[in-house]
Length: 110
Image 1 (cartoon, rainbow, N blue to C red):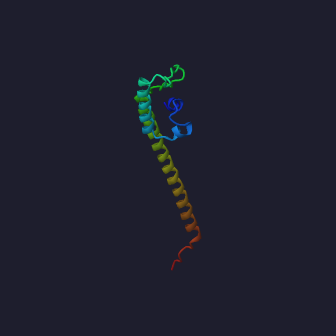
Image 2: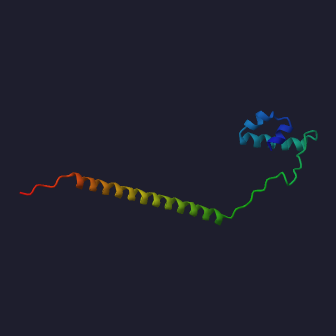
Image 3: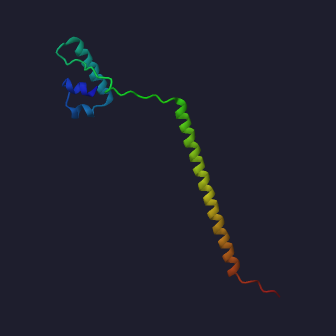
């Protein structure tokens, strides 16, 4: 669409690429109206099918399954992380208890 506007001298490439989508659509509508009235305006190019991008449709089920896989992976990652934190905390507490029991003198018996 922008290439057609540039070809019809609606602005330079630099100008047209900076336009908002709304302005591009409005200008393109004006170009279409001019094409109907004025035969000297460049005609709409006939794009070969190879140039027109075809959006490949991905079924919704595929998106849903990807979503749930990612959600499950995130949950598993959080669960594994919590397990590792718990393990480290237990090891540190065991070391602290062992240190305290060795370094603390035994109470004197009377």
